Structures are given as structure tokens and as C-alpha cells.
Length: 223
Image (tube, rainbow, N blue to C red; front, side):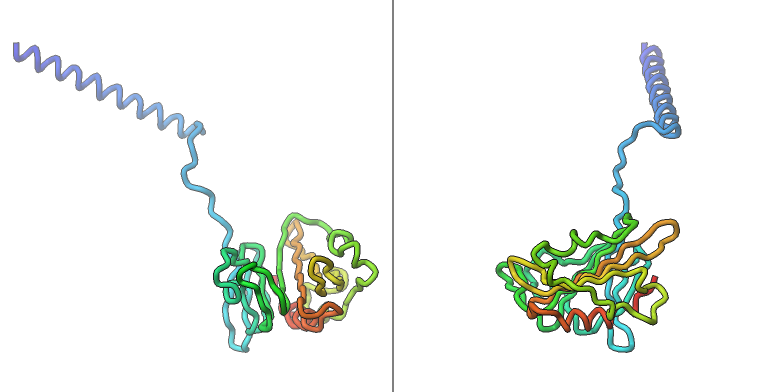
């Protein structure tokens, strides 16, 4: 009787083990042949823009995802320095915002009231310059000008053919003066669109601050 019981138990174990082994083989076969399996690990995100100091008193801003870097004055500040309670760092893989040292931000409303803000944004899907009407407010068209003086003469990547610079009042609700310097850079078989947008909340008629910043930064751009 005991032998019969042992025999039944052994048969059950063998059958169970065989079933598990067959199931495992089928699962591996499905995986090797591109079966529908959920992707548990999200794709890696692009590295954020970063800031490092150099030996000549300027900061190096790098966009690792696009192999672009340039130097900015050491006294420019980030949003976190001026508005510590803000959840927006204004730093991403393709953009960064920097502020002149005299900038003032209302930390309750998280809005800038004085100083200049320089935003740098990179787009890798554009093939041509942004249309002027998409940059300059309609109410500012009459006062808008071009300023080729900020285009560097000693940078192999930037010249009058690869850059367009507009200077204009930013319009309502707060009147401030803005500079929009856009550069198209060759990136293999595609183009990179790099925009330096500077708005000066302390000056509603021209902006020597924005002009000076662009003249200092653009010649240092590397790709």
C-alpha cells in the first residue's frame, strides 16, 4: 500500500516538473521571437544642461545631449538662487535660464520685476529660421530692429548667414526690451536651432545689458 502511495507521489512530481519545464521553454521561445512583453525600465532621459567654473572667471554652460557649450559671465544667476521656493529650476536637457546680478523676482508671484533674463533653447528638428512674425509681437513691429553687431566675427560656427538677431519691445503685460538671437548649426545630416532670448525688465527702450551679454557669450560657442 505504501509503495503504491509513493509511486503516485513520484508520478505527480514528475508530471508537475515536466509541465513547468515545458512552460519555461515556451516563455523563452516567445521572448526570443519578439513576443509582446512589457517594458519595465523606462528609456534613459537626456542629460541636463550643466554649469562648471573655469580658470578665467567665467562659467561654462554645456548641453551634453547636443555637444554644445559656451561661456557666460560668472555673476549670472539661476532661478533657484533668486527664487528658492520655486519648483521650476529652469534647467533642462535643451534649455537653461540665467539672470543678471541685478535681477529681482517677486517670490510670492514667481515673476521677475527687474534685471535681465537670458534663456537659451535648443531644437534639433528645425530646418529654417523662425518667422519674424512668430518672434516679434504685432504691436512691436514698428520699433523692432536688427542688431548684427552681436554676431561674432571670430567664431567659425556663427556668422551673418547662420544667424538672425532681432531687437524689440517685448510688449504687454509688462513692457521690457528683448533680444532674440537665433543660430542654425549643422549637426551631421540635420540642423540644430539655438536661440538666445534676452529680455530686460529694467529697460523698455533698447537694452545695453542684453546686447553686452550676447557680445560676450556668442563668440565662445562651441559645437
